[in-house]
Amino acid sequence: MQPSIEYIFLVIAVLIIFSILANKVSGRLGVPALLIFLMVGMLAGSEGPGGIYFDDPWVAQAVGVMALTYILFSGGLNTRWAEVRPVLPQAAVLSTIGVLLTALLMAGIAIVLFKVTLIEGFLLGAVVSSTDAAAVFSILRTKRASLKGFLRPLLELESASNDPMAVFLTIGAITLFLAPGLSPLVMIPLFIQQMAVGGLIGYGMGKAMAYLINQLKLEFEGLYPVLTLALVMMTYGITASLGGSGFLAAYISGLVLGNSMFIHKNSLMRFHEGIAWLMQIVMFLTLGLLVFPSHLIAVIGSGMLVSLFLIFIARPVAVFITLTPWKMALRDKVMISWVGLRGAVPIVLATFPLLAGIPQAETIFNLVFFIVITSALLHGTSIPFIARHLGVSAPMEEGSRLAMSLGDGCTPGNDLVELTVPLHSGVVRKQIVDIGLPPSTLIIMIEKEGKRFVPCGSTVLEEGDHLLILTDKSQSDKVRSMFISEPCTENPGP
Image (cartoon, rainbow, N blue to C red; front, side, top):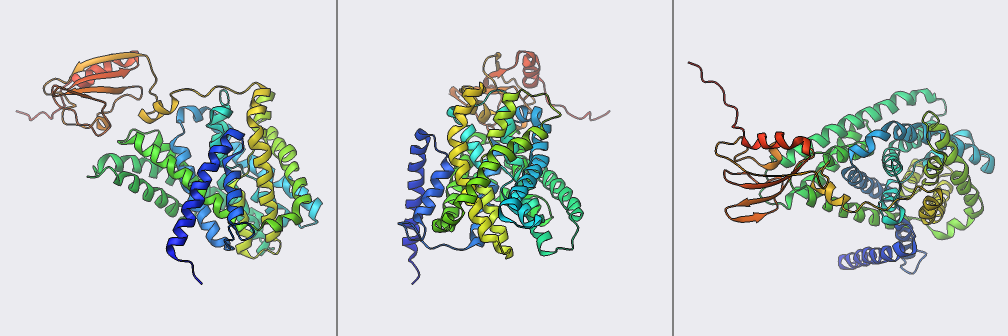
């Protein structure tokens, strides 16, 4: 008998609320949120007290892809380009060559332990080769696990950008398994295509999002979050349809948009942060429901060996080899090696062999699930301790989130400029977002017709408005001239 719709709604609501409350407890215990969400899903499943039967890899994969798209977009939206730009080369190499090396090393241990073929071993390695963006973001953006210097931006950028490589390797391994006569070299043009198309469309869509948000002038502010939700899904859909990496496009579009000036920036960033948390909960609950705990018992021994090999050998070796060209302190490399959390991405990728009908697909799925749980328990709980022991932990900067929401480059201090918009100024009847303020400049208060308020990007400036502007001292004269100068007009001629 089909359950009633009200019962389904009730169950979904209870599971989400319970996950949120459990996450509050997990923060105090130092346990990663992903582990809590997975456990809730497993308890709600057919072999748990909840008794919900769910065994549909296609639905789980669809939910996972949708959730990861929004999580990566939100991660890009909250990433400062100024922070990640210096570590872009290291992150690019880690997320490509590092992932490939991890997959190859894991293939070796799989061949030794399970006596499988090279392609079957490589398939397992490819599935678990990438770190998880959702897990890394949620842990490194807490006061408990803040890292010094370039470490946090490097690890966040790596985790957000290595998913496309893992997806490519997984699909490539499945293709080679199903077509044994196919040369692996045919996958190289496909890889270039996925990265190039994903990068270009992601950049273009990020610019288009900023332009549309600023220019559409929607009547209701509540429509802007709806617009961005649709644009994010469009970004993934267009990119994937053209043979590009939709995950890469989603992250880059978020990165471009987050480092642009647009109206309602604060509210939209908070909205997508909430969506990212909802997607994490839904994704991990779904993946928790998909697994049958009794099936994990058969892989405990081999799963533990594979997990320990990944954590203590494969990830560190890949990191140290990949980062050889750069002079880096040993403690920094050790920390990068240790932040190798596996999460939703490997579990979602483990559904690919299931849907492709690979003979060992169920064993691979169970092994991957066990590896994720082991990584969450060992990595997730120990990162703050390891960071303190290595001397790379740092207090979380207070106010960084506020500065980010007001616009990239805004920092406290500097110079306060107070002026009144004169008659015939070039900024009259323009929105703040359209006047082209320097990146380090912010209008923090306006007095308009005797009323004082904090403006937003859509605030229209009028003659006589009294402004209080925060800017860099080197920009003070330029900012004053922007508001005082008259608009340029064409010479009508004689």
